[in-house]
Image (tube, rainbow, N blue to C red; front, side):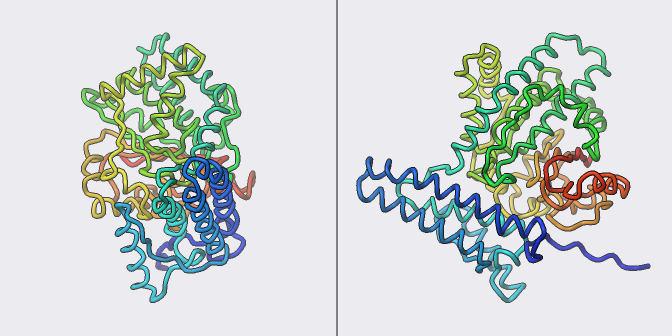
Length: 436
């Protein structure tokens, strides 16, 4: 019998592939936007803090420009020299790499997960050492704009939620259908990803997302929704559901709506939300983004949005919604580690997740970490690719934006390839996969 080769981590070492293009073009484009945002702060800081403020901001701009050049020319990564709590972990990862490979990691040759995450962590390192920009989210305006531009879809989805709430879902089959609707809306909300578009506008343009689900169905390559629903229906007396968040804007709103549905129909007694501890991959949710989203809706001119946001504010107060914002818990989500390392690296977080009825991992980066960002064969089972990560029953809701996916048949893959040769990286196709 021919021995199967061990999968290897994805990297940007091969010119012309998606990962190479990401590090060569998309990531530098994102850094250019960060630099532009900081340029707009120069006048403000000069006005408020004089020459010191101007020089501080220009120093940040210079360091971001240097980072962009280093990435584009495949220079070696370096150790971090900031005072953020996770600095020593990142430097340990650097030293481990040097110990194994006898050389420093470089942007195109290091594992993609490590290199791409390091870019965002380096941005935070630069900002953290600034006197006046240390708490500045360079992606904040883009995230707010994405939500504002999605408001028509947000309002229509709220109307749909209200319509469902006033209906009769005592019939199990009808409840299952509505569960599928809201789970799939949360899934397809993941299409709105600012890092894939290089930080360009990527809001929800479809004004009635729930009416688009039938059109999207052929692009769902694997769907464990029925299995997930059956699991949630078992012993609902104390059911905690965790959502490991991905993008802010419209996707976060769909996650909140899905959580509301779970609580309203007693498929969960508490929903816990896990954001990133720092600005990450342009559009990822931070604790501040989460709170600002609800606050933004609280002040909308629409009664139905204000009422829904008011209900969510109350849920945060009574803890039926729980937002994890403590850095000691959330820091793991912004490490370059696959999730199978969680029990060793962050036992506190692992213990928290062990008490969950269901873990819902949103989006592409979380999926990459679930399966270690390895180039697994497509027909590898999802459970095998998790490499033992199983603190609780879990599922992944992911639109495909990176060249890896598991749990598919050859027929699934061939069908997708015939329709679109870039099927794995455009966000057009999706999977709902589970490990129960």
